[in-house]
Length: 463
Image 1 (cartoon, rainbow, N blue to C red):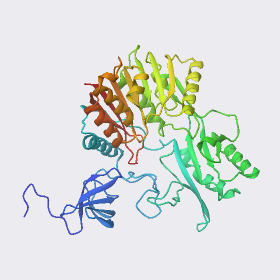
Image 2 (spheres, rainbow, N blue to C red):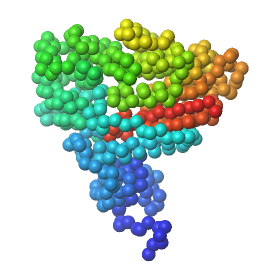
Image 3 (cartoon, rainbow, N blue to C red):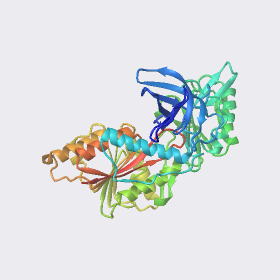
């Protein structure tokens, strides 16, 4: 007999799943309190699972049976998704409804902010969502000649494996790219360099599909002609060659449309190289840039600093709204490319405020350097996964020691775009508890549907 507050006992071996972790594993607890992470299980399901790894306080298991199914479980669109050996590891959440994926990511963001930064957002921003399929305009496909199968494989790695998955279609890349997978396998299989081309990097622009072939040895004349014939047979495909590191990338044949994307809301055109960092999901990026600028609430006379500015994805749109903009990045080469994009857009007739770019080591920022870069009413911060700790720490030091400021004043508002909720939470803790800011708002950006990757945006205002 049970009381109204007690849960009925489960049959022996069954587990009640009550959460999903950041790796998209179901989380259950045994009667003794031991946590079990179950690959393939979803919250509110009752399941059986096979334990694959045991530790003192936790176990890792794989789903073997579902006794009560979640209402949010859906049929995966891709035949290569699953828990079985050889399943593609490119996605982790295709079995969960997209809206539920967003809710899980919002919970991850809030939990990180509180547990790591001891900060709570005063308001939750509406999630930024977009197409759940065909969204991935950037990808890195591994290439392997598998002698046992007598075939060349082109795709993502298998789940938790160094082997390349035998995929014949992919639903997260654009349909025309999915249609290229089998022709690419046939192309590499026909080449002299069948053993020395380990990777094809994909970068889609608005008019061009760039394929970057990593080759460990010089390509023969015959192989180069095969690449050209492939491009001719697939309109819009553009081959780039990469003999060594990313800096060695070059276009196979000049001419044709330029690899670029547009931000139509701001009249900005952004050329890029296929190995440059640009957002994987252009649909979400357009919405994200617009949302970030609206949250910044830039006024006509404001000076704005765009930290970690990259090629100017936020800097150039900001220059259509602000009085003055400074974009700062860690690489002189990248800063030079940003200046080129600024000049191109001005030449195209886009009206842009006075805009400068500068190179700084943003992981070794000091209060003195922050003061030297000058006052700004607004900051846009868009760091890599490592976050912006040095920047936040310098801001905190200036707040704690006013004698360092020399007339400098902190920005009234900071909009922080993050690709890692843990480092955002760490930096938020500094800003809120040591730099004089309050966390006004935060929300998720579903840049990578069907993966466990959590992007987010947060707003900090001077307290």
